[in-house]
Image 1 (tube, rainbow, N blue to C red):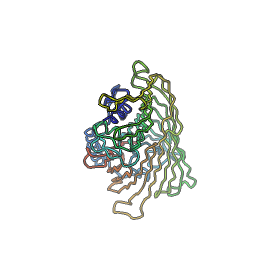
Image 2 (image 1 turned 180 degrees about the horizontal axis):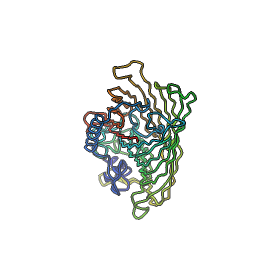
Image 3 (image 1 turned 120 degrees about the horizontal axis):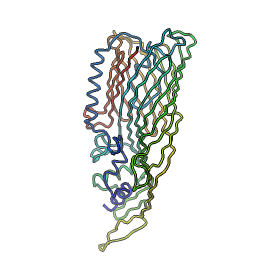
Image 4 (image 1 turned 45 degrees about the vertical axis):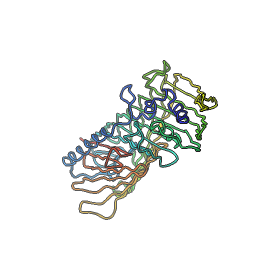
Amino acid sequence: MMALGAMSTFLLLWTSCSTKSYQRWVTLTDRGKKNVGVPSVSWYSSAFSLTVGLSVGLTILSCEAGETPLWRHAPSPLMFERLPVFEPTGSVISSAPSSRSWKTDINVKAHVATDFVTVQQLDQEWKSFSPRRASGRAFQSASLETTLASDGWELGAWSKQSYVASAAAGALYAINSYKSRSKLPEQQLMDLKTSITGLNRNGVRLAKTLTWDPAQQQNDWKVNLTGSINMFSLQRLTTFSSSGTLLVNSDDYRFDASAIRHDSSRSFNGFGSADSKGSGFSSDVGLMVEGGKDFFLNVSFVDFLSAARIQNVATESARFDSNVRAKDSDGNLLLRPSIMGKLSGNDLKIRPLQNTSILTGWRVPYATSFGNLILGARLERLAPISLNTIWISLPLQNECNAELDKELNFGSFGIGFRCSWVKAIVRSSSLDFGSATSLGFALSINKSW
């Protein structure tokens, strides 16, 4: 318990070893000024049920004939990607459209995943704690956006949340020991490195797709280059990082660590504003190669070039070491670590993390009675999180498709539907949502006129 107290002091430094402190570090959503944890599994269950019901109902209502580009059959990403501006005619931009038409899109999606506990236990006791490697990772990606497209141009408004976290196994063991009141492994040098970054942003976007199609034929190769510029307000910034080591023996301990935290929604004893807001810009780039109707490859960079500034952010830094020692009357070692800390309010310049995506798809020559299968893969990267997904689109009646995907890193399986103006998918790593380590859903509705 002596070593446990030492680690509690370090990992829960500014709240006198309160469990609520760690919950703030892994905050994945923000409702006003209140710090809350990961959305409850019951919330995801309700969202899943709603998404399934909407997808089935709207699929029945919307299935109608109409040609769709191959890349539109890919399931929605778990994070973010930049695809070409999609025209109402069902093809990417033509050089001389016969008439002006418009398309609106409404997209909502959310996904949360962790590889060391279940989603439900993230802000509770870690009963299923089991780090699979030398570090643990978790992320949440959520967005709501609406767009209006015409003649290769797209105007959109959006709201995004992105939170990524990574921690060395030693830090995870220390946190789990405190939460469960269990012993730390002895005779093991533990790395305490931890990094958490969270951004909540609202913004507007202007995008344009340019198409190079020298043959001007639908079955030939063509290249689509898409660029967009985003102006956004930074609603919340949350960061935490720590480094150091801990060594526990049967009758002794040693640790040397430091930590720093920024939170734009709080004030630390009068330092920093309790409701700091910022602003910034970012650009997205997407390059797609289409091989007629049978193949496509898209590479995109979201937040490719970006910058943001936020003023008077509450900042807390601390350093700890175990050089100060003392013993009680019975000769037991007492915990009296050396602690040095600083509170301040700082103006910060940040660069949102770049989200990289590679998406590809291929129409299988073998055809069913309703059409050809489409196979594909997607790689997504938002450092330090990597997602590798394989997907398949199964043709149904009236140009509708069933969509299935399997994410290999966190283990979610997705099932969804796509028809003329609705697209939906639900994902989970387990049929029992309470045991799932990866949960998410996406719904897209679009209409042309």
